[in-house]
Image (tube, rainbow, N blue to C red; front, side, top):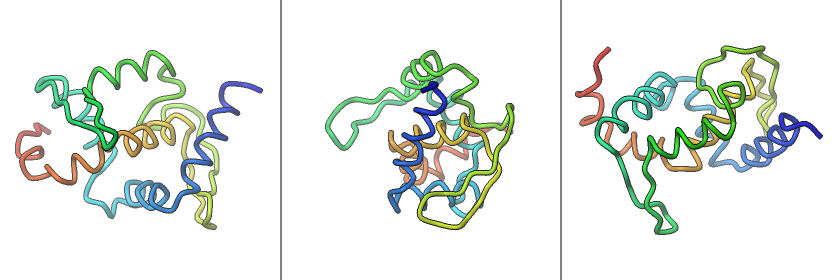
Length: 135
């Protein structure tokens, strides 16, 4: 089995859970108030500059930018990228009939953001974060 096939199986299992699927669809449908560009800006700019760290639900410290760099090194840009820079494919979101055109890298990046509570962190701190965002 290829790394991509294994990753897709993991992604399908993750998005099969309703709460994860809902967050994915809200990001892609732009109904959450948080865009992929917001996620990317927060992780690569804000979190790096401010060394953003928080405690996860299991009590561990999570340093956003360091964890991102580590995941990027582990997956490479080909399998971990918020923007569709490689070949898109039709993807039916598990548990729905909703089909999107995306990349494995984008699905994996959003999975990482959900799994590490980055979307929740941004939602809870949206006002203070986006007042600092330079467009």
